[in-house]
Image (cartoon, rainbow, N blue to C red; front, side, top):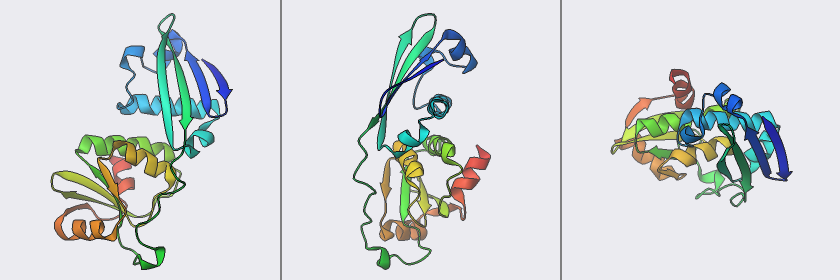
Length: 192
């Protein structure tokens, strides 16, 4: 494995065929939607020592090219972060304590699983209390406060939509089926 920082925010990792074997991957199998591949890619970033730099970026461009002898070259490029933190739609003072307002919607359980697995790289980061609802054919992971940015970014990659209005939490509380009442993200991490 050869790790080369190219410039700030850009990293090149070259894997040999042996490295690929050890990671249980082939160039053809690399698919960012696959939880195993995603986990391997984040482990590579951790190994490079650039994890903190890439955690702070808004989006991450990952390019993979074949290399000789069944290896591959992977380029990680930090893209511009979106405007600091997303501004709440209501002022902080108008948010009642303990209300569930940060909501991420998933089309199916597989997408929810992938999001929670991807967010597991941030397991040491404390997340606010969360609930899981099922409503209108979708799963809704809802937090009582804004989740840390690293968790938010991973959830956004897999969610069909996200919302931070009090109304979305109230609609789910009234019309949705409550699947997990407390600590939903922790419970989901444990069962996966």
